[in-house]
Image (tube, rainbow, N blue to C red; front, side, top):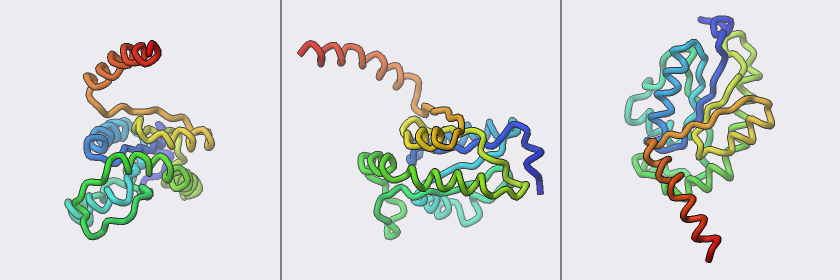
Length: 173
């Protein structure tokens, strides 16, 4: 078993928004960061963690000791009867914003308290831009954070280009 002395680059916690179009790019980024010597903790919601295990088998998330998966609740009612259902996006946005800060902070504190010589303390958080509660936790715990935009560049360009004319129209009304 490796000790955290082998991870000179640090420990990155990755937090995607709980939708496949956000999880996949974050997982790709996490793999790249891991390949460069970082210890990775990838944080899924309990709902998505169950879906991954169900679709890929109970050992699908087993792997490297320095790349692990953890979960936090999304705050929505359990839907164990239909794990393949898509969650209601507006409800999910509201719920993660309102309910995930405390479980996420507790998870970071748990990771940092392990102190077992295997898991290094968290040195950075990389979060999906939609998971803004992580900013509060990072600030409270004194951990640097980077927000990751998982959408296509064109989407960002459209939002940026449209925001100026829309705001001018709103203010002139």
